[in-house]
Image (tube, rainbow, N blue to C red; front, side, top):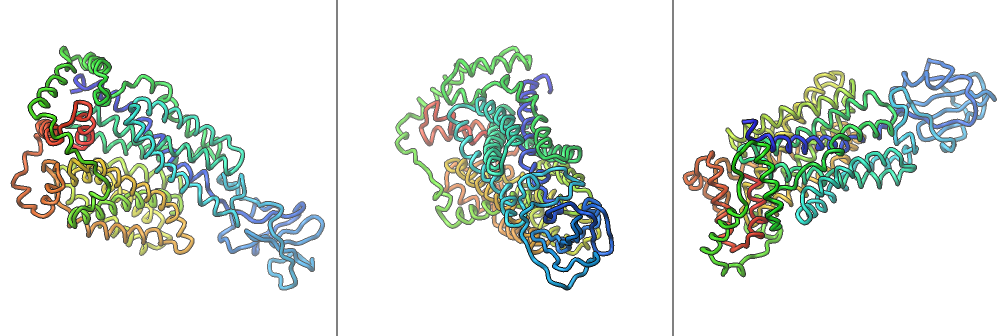
Amino acid sequence: MWFRTRFQACVYFASVFQAMSCGIHYLASVFMAVTPNFVCGFPGNVSSVLFHNSSASSIEDIWTLWTSTENYIVVQLENGEIWELDQCSRSKREVSLDLAYEYKGNKSVFPCSDGFLYDDTKWKSTVVTQWDLVCDREWLAKLIQPTFMLGVLIGAVIFGDIADRLGRQRVIWFTSAGQFVFGIAVAFTFDYYGFVIVRFLLAMVSSGYLVVAFVYVTEFVGIKARTWASMHVHAFFAMGIMIVALVGFFVRTWWVYQIFLTIATLPFVLCCWMLPETPFWLLSEERYEDAQKVIDTMARWNKVSTSCKVSELCSVQQDDLARTGDNDTSSTKKHTILDLFCNWQIARRTITVWLIWFTGSLGYYVFSLSSVSLGGNEYLNLFLIGAVELPCYIIACLAMDRLGRRNTLIPFLILSALICVLIMFIPQDFNILIILANMAGKFSIGVAFGLIYLYTAELYPTVVRSLAVGSGSMMCRVGSVVAPFCVYLRSVWIFMPLLLVGIMALLSGILTIMLPETLGKPLTNTLVEATEMGRNKKSCSEKTPPAHSGAALEKDRGCLVKKELGLTNKAAAKWLFPILITI
């Protein structure tokens, strides 16, 4: 009921609101780094322009006729010189006769030392036109999105660790302010390298916010709503993509466009300081008085007469530890990534899970970044690609709770592969059909991408669960770095990105068949238990407790971890955190 959870609801919606800014900055470059039609500049004033059989008095009148990068434009200057203008070179006709498009006489070839002329009918200014990132500098334009995604990878690692050390609240404050400051700073950079550096910092804080916000909301949301709440953090990210399309449609100058995108989430920056620290983190740091204040505030908001007493919780934990003893503390083992390959069953599971993480991220960004090149209205295309994610996560939640994690993941991975193949056979003139097929592909890969977070946590035992999710997330970031390069392969073959995504999705779907189903099953606590879950599915299913007994299951897991490892109160809270957020 609303009055029982309104504190958590307010904290949740306030936190995930800023996740829109992450979606905004992640996809902002699709319009900011557009390369319009262009040709070499010429030395002088033009008197007439010729393109095939069409003539005009200015080049601006010719852009509507431009159909291929292999075309060239003929211009006659006021001094009588006639030049042929290609994209990356220009030729001066040695004999200036009547202006004609075809010429078989001698020509002198010159580089584009007078700059370039750009088609500004759609975009008045982009970073490409600002710093002439074409021809021999084209590779600099293609590095804009990969360097941003590299910042996303590094930011996730750095701020995830800082949030565990300094608290979720402080990181949310810093990353929110950082997104606004760096977002505005991007618009006022004076050269390409400054632009890339500031965007790299923007990527770090954006990624840091998204990671910490996911943890933050799961620590406030109850067990019953945790799956839906964590899944729909991604829905607000998708809304950010839709905002990119809307702002891009109305604002056609890149630095103004960047400012408008950044201002979109200014209200959160002004009020994020009101968000409290999570009681979970405060308890892990033994700040019991501060935790009690937050709990009391929650009770007042939710109109609960008697709030939970931290002192009673600590007393219960001390009693549990007194019964189990602290003799086993020395047996606590440090686990490394090698434990994810401790035997063939676990190693095969790890390889499959990593591949799914990589494929999900690769497909997600390939479909998103490619949407502006599908033909038709590129702004509408991107808006629809973002909008299709909203029902995607609802379907994912319903299917994974009814059909199971594996039984949902397999068909959607294979479906996304089939859609990639289907798109290759659609004639290029059928723009609407192509757009609908791409939306279907984004929908199917989105279901798989959203599901793998929870499924990974359930596939691995307590002792390596955080390590497994963290390593999977790293593979996800690798996929996001590779995705822009994959999109650039359209210049080699227009269907190359789809072919690569389709192959990866099909391979992932086939390998997923070998993974065990985890729906309704208790989380394993040791690598031996996790291995047995994969070997003897029938035996595991017979021991499965009811799926709805979440609270009891959470309590039992916590007690079992403390009993096996002999943890202190502080250590117990830190160990229990990754367990509780994955239930």
